[in-house]
Amino acid sequence: MNAVACTIQGGDYAHGGAASQRLKEQLKKIGAEPAVIRRAMIAAYEAEMNVVIHAQRGEFRARIENGQLDVQVIDQGPGLPDVEQALQPGYSTASARARELGFGAGMGLPNIRKATDDLQIESTPGEGTSLRFSIRLRPSALYGEGRHSVQVFPERCRSCFRCLRSCPTQALRVHQGKPQVLDYLCVDCGACQRVCPTGALALAEPHAQLTPAPDVTLVVPPAALAQFGPGVPPQRVLDELEAMGFAGVLVTAAWEEALRAAVREWAAGGNAPLPVISPVCPAVVNLIETRFPALIPHLAPFLSPLEAIRETTAAKRLVFVVACPCQRSALLAGTLQPDRDIIPLENLRSAVAPRLAEQPAGAVRAFTTPQEVDTPPLPLVVSGIHEVAALFELIENAQAPDISVVEPYACHPPGFGSPLLSADPHLAAYRWRAATPAGDARATAVRRPGDYRPRPGLRLDEDMARAVRKLGRIDRLARSLPGDNCGLCGAPTCAALAEDIVLGRTTQEACVRQPSRPKEAP
Amino acid sequence: MKLGDIARELRLTCLTPGVDHADQEVAAGYVSDLLSDVLANGPAGGVLVTVQVHLNVVAVVVHAEMTAVLFAHGRQPDEAVRAKAIEEGVALYASEDSAFEIVGRLHALGLRGPAV
Image (cartoon, rainbow over the protein chains, first blue to last red):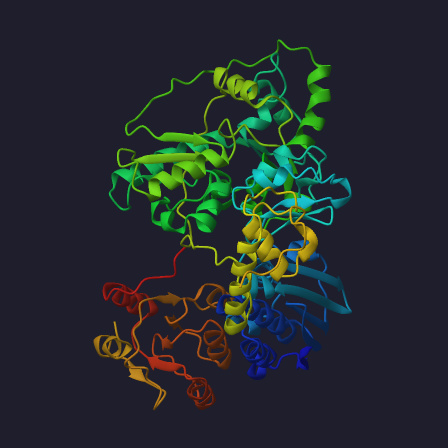
């Protein structure tokens, strides 16, 4: 539906904001969530005021369709000579009059980018600017938030069903020969990618190539440096990267250490129930928010090491090499662009390997092996998403009263078990420990800006009465199924299949163990 | 703390008859004269301290769902701004003190900025 369509007059400060106001009323009428409305208002108001401040006139059009808000603001004005520059905070071409009124601080377009799921700007100097943005309304309205970096390539799937049982939150289905990830359940742990033999489940695209540039600071995890075999210590790879012409190369290990110290202090401060859980692995944080919401108070309120680097590093441009899907998703919750700022391990490997082969080993800078200091309390390090989930169940049942800090990782061994790593993870972890490059004095832990929140999960229906009826049907159907969770239907459990049937993800014939199709028990 | 108590403590003058939100609990605030900054960071339900007195301030505060605006340094909005604020249910208050002074007192009364 067309939500708003109107004309904005340039220079008309008195009526600036009228179009956004109308849009807000429409969004309220369809029951959009307050947080989504606020984001929509930030973007719409900034876009509207841009026309008032800079252009002669403009058209504001907003459409709501398929659970998405699309806004388009097209103006006749001076245009932007350099769109990329205009997206930088602090850049402004506003008049003195606009600045007197408190506009023109160079925050408009950056604000819009932060508030929207997609933003496109086209501009011709002397003619005008066209700005389009989208905000998804449906995920939070019906399914709760879900952002993951697992991409499905259905044509590669051979229906082996290995992924079904690998998933700690039952987020996977393989119906009609095609894998499907239920966004609201996926915690981005990478377990399904590890077991998928055909690459039907892979790291989401797009991503960037490793392209050195003098304004780019590269951020790399230890796993990226320790994947080149026995003759190539991590420091050698680091030297090679530095020689390629980046502004700098940061290794995340120092930030992991800073987080470890901060979590230890947090636990000692008596601010939270013990054991305190370190947020070092974004997938584990997702797991807690999805499956163990009762443990949220145990999570120490800090950003993951990569997010801390993103928030505190004064660099012109940061480009991240990510070792796993959850790191990619955590980084993209900010303003980074996947096709520009995110590089998967493989792209680093393929760019660096030829250089390592060219130059004989030997010109290796001296490296230090740091003395590991075990400052009490000793953290309980647990790795592997299923092992982590098992421990969390014990913590929920108060069976770990002697533990004060838990440091959980979705992958095994910690930080090196990513499905994207081509080297053997244990060898890579050993080679890192045996020759760890020097730390980084700039490393620090950063407090999280917001609270951890339980994920709302699936609502069966927007209408409460219909949702209750569906719940009843799922229950009856589940009891009529064999109940041994064989997984041959493409759902991980019989209860999950019952839900899939009622929600229309598959049909009643899916259960292959029933002589006749499942009937609903009375 | 209730906005009415804050107004008494800081000797604020209410500029929007009928809309003083005296009984509303206020826990957060923000100070800025840059409207994009207020839009992006102003805490919902909080108060804004500013020297900007024009109509767009009301629009931004409405979008940010803030409760009241405290104009610092003796700045006074005109009649159109007051009328718009009353229509939108935003309370406007004036103070002779500087923004620095006002924010210091609000902080001492227990108000805090948005979580960063």
